[in-house]
Length: 151
Image (cartoon, rainbow, N blue to C red):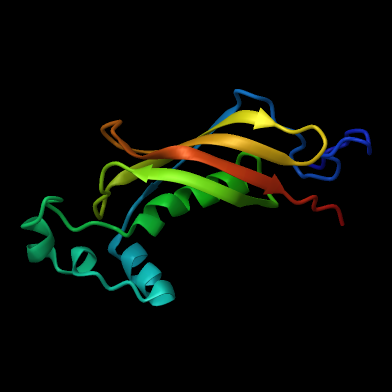
C-alpha cells in the first residue's frame, strides 16, 4: 500500500503513510539457540552466559540467556515491518534492559507512537519487550525515520 497524501506532506511516499499518535503494534517470536549462534557469528559475542548452560544456571539469571541484541532486535522488526513500517530505521534509542530473556522464551515487541512530525517522517515511540508472563524485559523510547520508498 502506498501513501497517497499531498506532496507537501513530509510523509509523502512512505509505504504506510503517517501513523497516528497512540497507534500500537506488536510482534512476537520465540527465541532459539540458533538466534544466539547467529548473533555470535555476526558480532563475535561468545559470552558463556549464552553458551554454557551449567554456568548460566548457577548465576543470578538461573538460565541460559540470549544476547541483549537478540532481545532488542525484535523491535527492529516491529518498526520496519509493522509500525511505522517499511523503510523505517532507528535514529536513536534509550533502552533499559530489566530482565534477561532465556532460550525458548516467547517475547513480544510492543511499540506505541508518542509523537509524529508533520514536516518529515520522524516519530518518537514508546518501546518494550515483554516475556510470556507479561514481565517487562526491556523498555524505553526510540526515535525513527521512515524513508519514502516510491519507485
